[in-house]
Length: 222
Picture 1 (tube, rainbow, N blue to C red):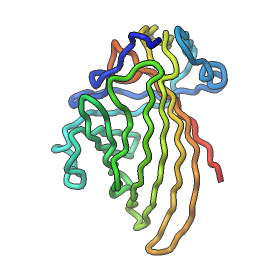
Picture 2 (picture 1 turned 180 degrees about the vertical axis):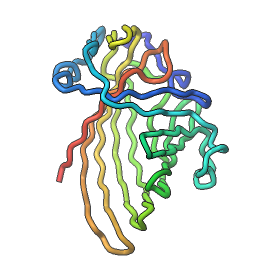
Picture 3 (picture 1 turned 135 degrees about the horizontal axis):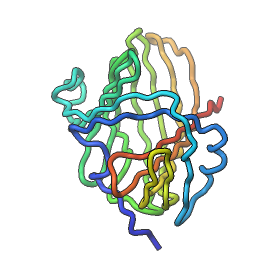
Picture 4 (picture 1 turned 90 degrees about the vertical axis):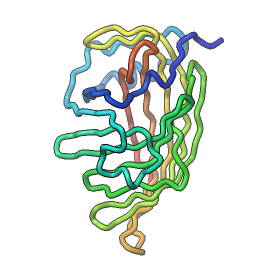
């Protein structure tokens, strides 16, 4: 039986939103709380410490410097990390979010051969999203990268999230597992091929926008 916790397009960042993302040290908590899935879970992250932060701003693509590269995008999230500024473009509808490209510091453009479905709506406990996509990433130094990624997301738990600032109810957690192959080129010369395995967890409350907690792990496969 599915929970009544239901995420919609109203629970994700929108044009005009400005919010601060706080980096945290989850050492010791990663293995304790992340395996917990299922109904009515309580995740206690009240003791985490912030180690850094960056700003994210929801913009209309028309006011951004790379709008002409991604003419189909209707939303852009500007991410400011120190001296680095990135612009992530997407198409947002009432039924899904699809990533269409990223540009910014050190990165000229990301061109998808097929858009990357990130999330579908409405989204609730045990719902899944599966997608594969191929993109070409053009770097400012003249190199490029062919990027293949396969992603599987599942809303694997719901319950209560305890953070240092507050306790949040009606929280849905979704787990995303992805595999990617990055082939790096300089001109026509193949420089390297790297395979990555990613797992990340996101907690979103149906009462808030945007997400409350996001934890990401990455390991190089070979």
